Image (cartoon, rainbow, N blue to C red; front, side):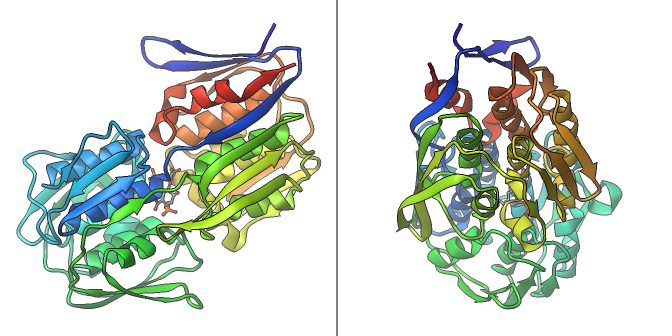
Length: 449
Ligand code: SPQ
């Protein structure tokens, strides 16, 4: 019997079944991952507020960028259908977004709602209401509402504006210097976007460097930005006018991470993942896997439209435990669920600290990953700010649940590849948030024999 990977449609959701055969399975081939989600959102948003046309090549056609596109269409930007990876955006111009007649729905996407809030807050005389799905409505918004209020924004919502739905009465904003208590690209980007519409210099200082795609793209679109790498500070000078640009979106390293771990843990695997963005603010996963002695090679390194890109070759090798925390965490924040899977197959005890932010993602990723991996027989202990994972115990297939979190769904699928018997992942459709053809790629690279 061959290993089978099948999707079962139930009336409410999808189940992904991974039935592991006794015959040896390996992962082979050359694949591409979809466009980077963070860059895709920013290309649509900056395109929407720029003057003129922006063309985007390689846009992620996932649910999250679709939420951004539908919000900004409602705000007056012309965005072509998201049915090919080449998308055209005709911008409305800064401060020229129109008041929509209905509620803006950011779906499951924290990036959409938090970055958009920065733009809406500075549209004087206009009223907006924004919401999202059940997960997004439980995620904290005060991290952006607080600095926006310091800039003069008027925002209302449950828990004093911490929870969506939120109502925004646009205002003339003033510049601030905000010292963010957390390293968050969404907080930083929200304030920089609001700063575009103020008179003067708006600065954000963060405790550690978070992903810098907004800074790179704002500069490419013509904004005046200065960066102090010593203090992790970025300053934008407003008011600014942005000009539409061609954007080329590299493959998403957060999606590539599933294959990097799969190729490392499944015996005899040899995979090449082409065209992956390797921006240094995102490559923490490569450093963590290097600490675990993974066999990963960066090939054909190049720069594409202002972002570093490489092909990544991964071959199976026995992983060793590692300890991670501190400034590395923001550089691999979204890869911690799949890193936990890697750790479950590594020799020794891996400790992940300083990652309490994972509790306020699409799910509480610390609690969910600990619980779901333990259902497969792993030895995972939840820490207040991380996970302790003792690897080496063989996993056995079981019924697990994504909790509607795309990264959890895909991480559990990779764990299932190396678990005996059948692993059933409930609510597996969540993967479409960031990786719509994840299952097809998984089926494509499985080799028996
Ligand atoms: O957009 P959303 O829902 O917040 O998505 C996640 C993800 O796993 O895809 C987080 F749950 O990614 C964030 C990431 O964690 C995307 C992001 C960005 O594009 O700016 C930044 C990170 O969040 P934060 O809170 O650290 O700024």
